[in-house]
Image (cartoon, rainbow, N blue to C red):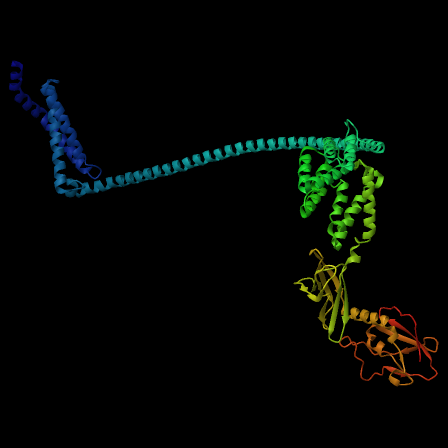
Length: 609
């Protein structure tokens, strides 16, 4: 307590001593600092900075003195300096704020100081320029950095793409290797498949030969049993069961015959005749539906093609034909199928055959007979008498069908006949037809010829009109003809060439040849001494020259004919005389016509009455 009181009494004297010693120079220094800070005001408010720092320093020193952290005698000079500096700098800053002087108080009063500030402003401008340059450099650096980042990013992307391409390349290589491996595997598989097919083909060939041998053995056994006669008590072989089936069937024991046929079928022998006979028995007993059911079950269990073929025969009409055609397509080397297919088009099956039916029958029979060479049909038959019957029937039918397969001989023909009004076209069809139509040219619709007012006795239907008309101005071209046969199937079209000039000549020639007795007329209508040749004159478009001789003399005379007029071919020119005079001594006349096609008629003799 006493120490504190002593200090309180000594403080004023210490303060006064410090102000005396320090105040003078501190005040000077403070005013110099204020002067400098005022001059530097354009750069920064240095007066405010000095006032703030000095005030803080004074406060710290005062607190240190009060808390006896320093000796008062030593610290007071510093306190006086800091306080003086704070007061002077603060005063300068306060006056600057009141006067709103941005360049300082002294610069406003002393022009030299303002000039000094301007020189300092150059430095400031340079500093500003440097700052601007630094700022732009920073921006440039940032731009470069961004570009660098983009480059880095692009580089990363390129690296990523390259990595993807590398991975894709590796994957592609793997795919190529996999494809190569698959191709190699496929090639090996194909090769193995080809070897397997070859082996199967060889096996099939061996099996076929084995079956042929087997059927030959069965056929020989059957023939021996047939010669022996009587049923086998305990049959065990295919030929024995077939033999018994025939014996029971002939004796009327249909139940045992059926059992024997089924037992034979159990051996799956690929011979046709046992199954056709069995099917006949089934149709008699159970109808076609029953036979179809039995053979359907046998076909499902067995592999013999004969069973499948006979099963197809148990269907009705169009379905049966469809299945037969499908079988032939799948088994083109199975000879019996062609004979059975021919029966679908036979006269016995259809009642009346159209030309297309005859051709289909002939085609199938010709194919069947082609297998006869070198005994190629024997392997399909157990009972050789059945094969002999099929061969006889095939030869007989082919002889009856004749050259039906010659398409040129069985095509429609067209006979044009010219009249004064135009052309009458007569159609000749090679078979009974139920409808005829025609067309001029290679395109466009067909025109029906219509029907006559009577029925065709062959078809029982209205008879189609076999002719149509064309104008006399018709030009040369193609005429298409088509017709419907008795079954309503369309045949054709057939293209026939029509040449009006040639048709006129051929038509006239046909009439001249047919009615040659009308060429010459002696003393016609009481005109004694005149020889008329009006008939030849009317059909002169077919005549190139007419030579004659009298009373058996040589044909050294010629009748000059006027030119043919295609527009009016039968008219006789008004200034032409269709006759010439002869003496009463002429008793006969010989005539020969040379036609426009170069042929000559026979020498015709005419006697005078």
